[in-house]
Image 1 (tube, helix red, strand yellow):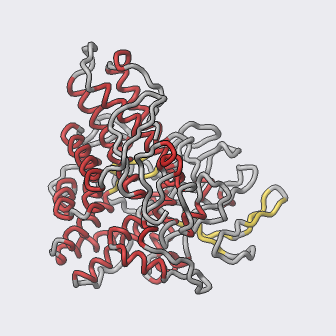
Image 2 (cartoon, rainbow, N blue to C red; image 1 turned 90 degrees about the horizontal axis):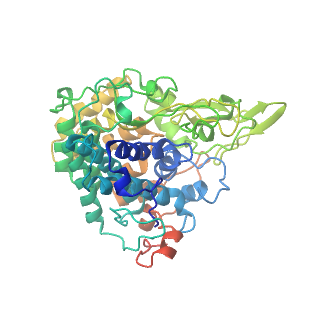
Image 3 (cartoon, rainbow, N blue to C red; image 1 turned 90 degrees about the vertical axis):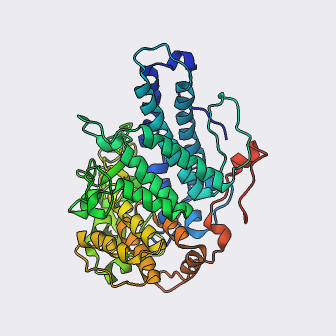
Length: 493
């Protein structure tokens, strides 16, 4: 890969409080920028389209994004850049720039040790987040921890998976030691990195690694007493589940630990462009033409919500609209794959990336916040860790706390194996359309995931997939293999 942080400058000219703050701002702007893709919808594709939660939508003709190939398990080294490799490494490069510059002495008296430590801690949190997403998608990856000149490619082998996780844990542990609990007087609290956010991410990392003892300890460190923890943060479950995805209510909820916020509008630099890629066409008729719709929920997911009596969460994450859209005297059919093509067919569309765009062109976008880390996730992770470590009875009330929010009866699961399945199911209903499902399945077990996908059927009863263990990870992009002879490909590609 080539690590070329934006606005590359010498450490001497930028090693000031204002200079480091500028780089820090850039680390966040890259995540929210309308030109970015990963946290808006590549992550959603990796997790939901790859799984039993969503289909590709309409057949994707954009080879750079390869949504259809991801859905069909036909992706390869030439299509896998759309899984996030170049974008995530670009963001890692900016984090590395800040960390490297801050490591040298500064002549700026305004750059106190406290300010420097906090800025570095924020960069380490983000670097850990990006590496975590790389590891989940590709397995072992290249650990690039320093800046490189703009014309220097990083030619290193992939690190061992254990070493990748060790680096992620180290970054988050360092960050926890220097981050504040909150930012008094700041309105947009959850767009900044805090100690509770770093603890929440660390709990997820430990769980994905299979280290449930440390996952449990970290969950307890961040969760409040109401959920058996010792944390002092003020997060609480929102009363109305749908508020988490409402264009006007999703930002700064009480449930969020860390989120990306957007401001919609034509050519708005921080617009959520994924809204008009995913939400139904007749929700966004200010755009000249309805656009191909991606990431449509599967009938299997819809049936799961209905059979579980969970209409609150179903209607919170999706809407049902006719396949046909009439606009400016013309008729359009979305015709997403694996659904009937009749005009009156009610198609489910995700609204977890926004409902409405602001603006009247393809350069428009929505304002919905994307919550990266929230309380319900950590509550269910604690239940998972308790069950994994043999304390099944203590896990059950945590599952029920999540179910109570959406007026569902307590779970009837009681044995360790049944509770494990109940947690996995609860996570599906709670986090559909939120880039969690594929990682949840893989964490539950490779054999289970392969069996589930190979038994998956569309609405006509047709089996769609025939996967093997090699397909649980994505291919390393061909661009990386061509530029870095030390990099190896994942098995099966």
